[in-house]
Length: 422
Image (cartoon, rainbow, N blue to C red; front, side, top):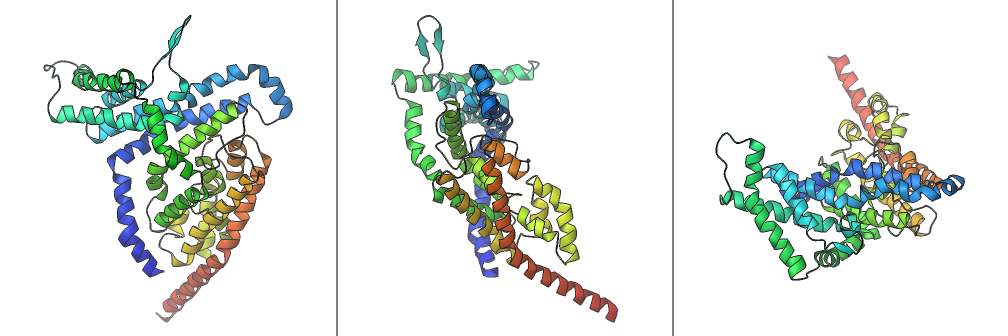
């Protein structure tokens, strides 16, 4: 086991640490995370429009279109909001004006869509080009806009205002020349040359989206996240920087299908991992905390009491660093194996229709059974599956915890004997 930790420390951790600190990926991660409040609130309007109780659903049906307006203007504009935030954070990472970076990014993204003409109502932009399905276009446009801003600033191709001019005004004029580059460039490519950026990017990233919805696309992130956590690296932050855009595209497709009353197509948006795999946090450690309540080792028993409430709310840093699970050869195997096994069970349960697929993003600090119930639009079978998964993880952790418990008891007895001899 020590050899394995050595290999991880030598090969995996340096690469993943560098990846997590890469400024563009960090900006993408922070920018997308900033949209989560809008996604969560918007998702609840989808539940209100299509409640899981048949009698209530019939009563609400005449008002469904009106109820869905907040949903369409939050989830339906997800990529637009994310693009602004990505531009903001990326500009800040270069020590540029974040507001200018966000505005230029958003302008570049909007310009990739051609307005549709309506004879009696003027022009309108299609929401389908501004939602989660266009997340990759939003990322590309944000990076493009901020890099132009950075280039202009580094080459001093900016308009400088005299001293005494308010800072906000001066910064807006600094962004004038970059805007004069970005806007015509995107317009020429999209409108003058007729190059459909959305279609091209969608086709380019389609294999990645399809792969993310496969069994391999589910298991690989789980393995990487648990391996990183086991060595003390925040695996969710590292993997999420790369995987979250794919998860959001899958989630957006599921939400669109639910709003249209169609079958849910994708199995593995982020709620799949949050509610059915990371039960109690990465490594599915709620099962571990529950069996620790009955431990004969005083330290483990006291840790279980301290970590039970955070574990129920899917916060498990106290477990990982306090038990500890990190760099602990006795708990490494169940920490990695447990999530893989319950992910397999969940995948096949959803694949054969025993449990509904998730399409709602709900607050991650909810207890897992409640979160799973809401994420699947009110499927009671999701609660049963979560409870089964918790039981499975507890069974897997049990023999390894007992071995660790015996080790702690022996060390405690040896310490007591040493004190008596002194």
